[in-house]
Image 1 (cartoon, one colour):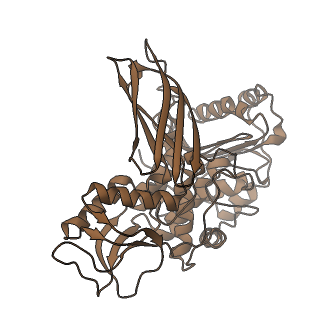
Image 2 (cartoon, helix red, strand yellow; image 1 turned 90 degrees about the vertical axis):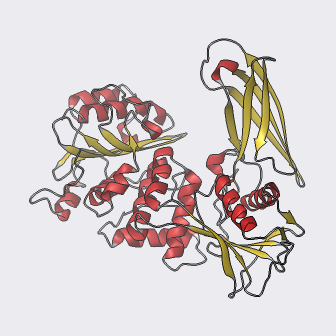
Image 3 (cartoon, one colour; image 1 turned 45 degrees about the vertical axis):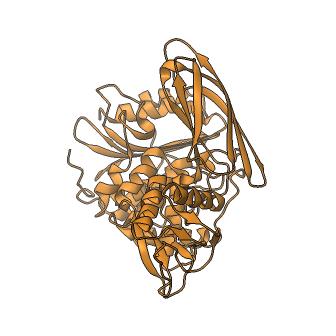
Length: 473
């Protein structure tokens, strides 16, 4: 399927912008679908425009609304435009040039870790890094000093947004973030005893897991139903899990936040170093790296083109936050802050003729009550993205309708499946979708729909009707 095209003959940017001021009614079949939601039209912003052509419909296109996770489109496109699809993050273990490793493997000075803000640094990556240290003869270290200076003070309280401090979607950004800062609680079925065996991965010191998950016989009905309760007392963390699960469903895991990113990272380093056979006499602390330090083990992230696929298809909030801060840091705003990074993102878009009037990007992820953007601004950006050099990487980062990501269970009928690349968004009072739809006639459309209302969840059926209707145009 060819993805490349541009604005149609005579379709100038000024004409596209002029269309934003026009209210264009929905066709009768979609008007009926909207009416069935029983939502007021005042809660809706909608734009549908043929790529290279005119707008088919527009409802309150210039009204700024909360887009929820659709805001990730703004952050990922700005970052992709500024950093390029091959941009990578580096995480380096370093030692002072004057430090030495003796015949017993003792490093004479601290081990330094230059944190690069890698948003997708995982436990196996840390394990490989520390294994490389062991292969280079290092066995006994004193302190590990983490240099987080690429970012400023960007730590957030995970409970601020909705009070659910243990949920991974609320994780705080950090320059050294391992596995998004979430603990993996693993539950494995034992059919012989009809019980669940459980453990924490990795088994961090001071973390205790208690579980009372009832075994259920019969056919797997779906994901097990469990609740968690976390108690932190000093250095001790106790996680209690209760609920029930059908043994026929097989092994399952639950991810929870329990420690700050800094404490979680420190315990990960200590535990993994022990696992690879190392010993440590000091502690993990934050500090600076001497100018004379040299790298002894390095890790490189996947390229940005792959990272934004994880962000947009899975709608990962903390990865988006870190990406926004990276954008600021690479533009020279070190140590990067959210405010400075938002300014950089807006400058990147403005240079492409995208003023994004009225937009409040906030933290860049859409997990916000303050972030707003208009359907018109998103439509202009999506049109610009389609004609940009990074179009293939950007479009391929979006969920494929009925196939993967957040749209894998939507419109899976053969008549509609795979005919759209979309980003969805949902909060308590927000429902949104934006992206590209392919018609069976060969036409391509940009679509943006945002609903802000206490019953916004009712708009899902309208979104499906809208997308299905476009595939036939």
